[in-house]
Image: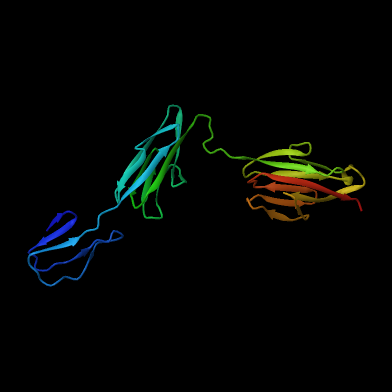
Length: 245
């Protein structure tokens, strides 16, 4: 039996077995044919070639990089070298972060393993994107976003937020919270006006209720106190008044 041009050639066989190569599992041997002599052939499907698009940030060097062609089911290894004074941060595969040492299987069956600055696709079954990054001394490798909560109020009451003296913009780190307070006639402000309600992005909230905004920010009202928690975006906060009964 010889392999020529991706074809199996079998000569002078008493019984011929046709082998169906199933790349998702073991080769499948079909029932034998009748006894034969001479030469028979069976076609073996060729393996595909996939591309790993590999890049890194400006603080590192990646080898190899760019579009790297890999034969189906083969392996390829990438190595990242941080620049001087920089430290390796993480790998990202198809946009998802992979920190430290680990291994896994992607949806198309591609397997991978990482060991800090070395990343290997151990069994390639499709095209993928690999990205490596590093960070410098004193830098936050995963900085969080700051959001703004802008507080306004009506004329005859008082309102302020944590650490503030009144209406204005309060900066809150992603996922953190800020509490706002209202003062009315009961606190020595204008004797003719009382607290009415809080509004978030112009939508009023009833007292002693909870509301989760579309971006995941959660608001709690407790009378004249409003807490905006798990802040995930910029929002407008308003404190409204009413005539004292």
